[in-house]
Structures are given as structure tokens and as C-alpha cells.
Length: 269
Image (tube, rainbow, N blue to C red):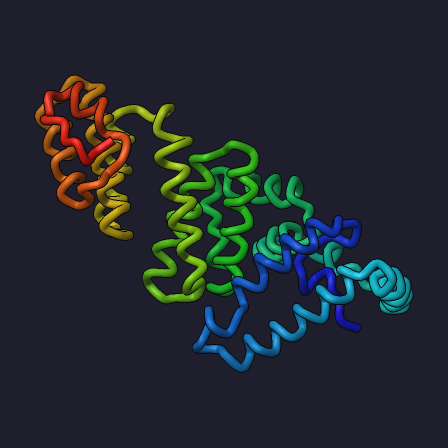
């Protein structure tokens, strides 16, 4: 019997809102337009995902399905999660357990195990999961860290995912969301708490990654702000000019212009 909760990556007590959210996320990941290299497999996965969603999103169908699933699991008598949990000395099983717990909404347990394994042991999750499973698992971990305001850890995982995707596409169009999260985390949540040298290094790396012309203009503006806060007016002026060359309508620069003595243009705000 197919476990529709596992297909959607949710726990059996998930709310209707959680079901919809997980369906949208999984649909992005496996849609044939996103993974053209595996179109046939993606179409099959999408059909299965739609079936799972249609059943679990209907109260009557879900209740009937839950009774059938419970009876099936009792007959099977096999607890996959408990099987993995008992294999504490097997890094492969523990890696699978992290991914399983994230999909099954056991987030606290997943993060606790991940931290215990990576704490000074040289453990690398990507060594034990397939490339695709690792990328999915890393994205879910990053989401958990982000919701817990652990921005640096989330940023590092999103950053690693970006390099994985650039090396060999898997997320395809979904990588735009990873880029957006990198930009948001760094520029709006992390910068105020970073040392100037660290902020400068991270912003310059973002420029080198060259997401888009508009992104680069924004990163240049942020660099100009950091340099201005250090009293390094020449560097601030350099990056502000560079940002405006990339985007003449770069927003939010008027006060910065005045601060570093840059001629204020009427078409900038």
C-alpha cells in the first residue's frame, strides 16, 4: 500500500494547510517542466503526488484512507523510522533518518541528530545520501534553521545548494527561490550582526556569483553602505557608482549619496 503521507513528506496529524504547503513544495520539485531530463519519471511522480493530495485534502477520503493505512501498517509490523534509529553506528542509516524525520515533520529530532553527527566528527551528510536526496534534505534543513532564526546556518546550506545546482542542475527553476533566500538572509537579516570584514566578503562573493544585473546593483549599494559606515568614503563612492551603472533606477540611495558626497540625481530615490 502506498503511503500518501510519505509521498507528500508530512506527518499523519498534519493540518489541511500543511498538506497544501507540502503539496506546492513537492510539485515545484518534481514537475516535468522543472526536471526535463527525467520527464517520464517526473510525470509519474506528479500523478502520484496529485492522487495523494486529492485523497488527503478531502476529509471523507482521508478518514477512509487513514483506517486502511493503519490496518496495513499493523499487518506489516515494520517501523522504518525505529529501524533507522536503532542503527546508531551506521552513518548511512543516520543520514536517512535525518531526511526521513524532516519529511515526516519530526524537525526537532532531525536537527538534534544532524548537530550531534556534525559536531567535530567530520561528518558530511552529502557523503551518505544520493545527490538529489542530499539537496532536498539540505533545503529542508535550511528552512528549519531559518524559521529558528539561525540565519548563518541556513545561509551556508542555501549557498552550498546554489553551488551544487550550478555544477549540475537539479532544482532548475526552483533555484530562483534559493537565490532569493540567500539575498534576503544576507542583506536583511544577517548584515546588521556581521563584522564589517565578513559582511564585505560575503557581499563581494554574491557579486562574483552574478545572479543578475539588478542583484549586483543591489549588492553594490549594500557594500557602499558598509564602507560608508567604516568612514571609507572612496570605497563607498566606488561601489555606489558601480551600482548605479548597473541600475540607474537603484532605489533607496538618496541618503547614502548625501552621506558620501555623491551628486543626487532626480531619478533616484
